[in-house]
Amino acid sequence: MTPTVTKAETKKRTSRIIVKVEQSAQARTAIKEAVHLATSLKVPLMGRYVEDTALLDSAALSFTWEVSHTGQKRKITPDMLAMDFANEAEQAQLILHEMIQSTEVDWDFEKRQGDPLEELVHDAEREDLLVLGAPDVSYGAEEISVAHMLRDATTQNHLDVMLVGGVHPHTKQSSHVPAPQMPRFQGGVLSILEQLEDQHLEARPLFVVDDGSSQAEICFHIAQHLALVLKMTVRRLVVTTQDAAEIASVLRQRGAGLALFPAGCKGLKHDTDATRIARYAGCAVLFLTADHSADALF
Image (cartoon, rainbow, N blue to C red; front, side):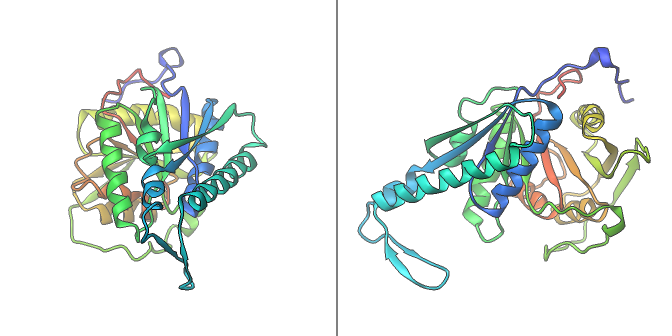
């Protein structure tokens, strides 16, 4: 039975949103989603740019070259790469500033050196929410790294993590737009149970992915509060499949505006299923840490 939500029970869990900032299209979309959340939840936003020290180290090697999309080559040196990092950090900060300047969000920007994913998690508090873009399908190694970071962040660091992929602005009326070329498999049955409906609320609903676990029920309770803040409807997506393609397809076809997954969801068979769903679901995907309790809310 779903707990009754009352104003007196509400406690704010998220105290800060940390977003990974870069110049890529995925990063821009992630920044936009992070700004929207920070505005709605009235929490501070931290934009974090990380200079990849592994790339800096490799630039010192004599055989390191950069090949552009036109096939042109140039020798890479540590000084050149450091300058590229500095320019990208400056542009990333400008992107963040441009997206946030019309809001009242308290925000900051910081530049670090290290592993980009490790530094995103480093010194994050249990109450923080991490936001980053889902890697493009062509970056297989990065996808595995993000998948492992997501697993460790939600299970060991007890953080909530949002992956932002191909978010698109369609509503129910255009929800029949086919998903990108994602492999389809024969899987289990998915059923959708509508829990809250209000014609005055935003058309794109918030879906809670329910794998039958007690944690999924807590996710639904959290979603009720979050949906009121974001002015969205709440729906429960009951999964009896471990087919990431099918889950992503249903979320996209139903015009999901946001999807909530419990950490360790039974519908995610492989680590990279999380990044694949985020890339093809057509909405941001929020993975909630397993240590949430019913009264630990946004």
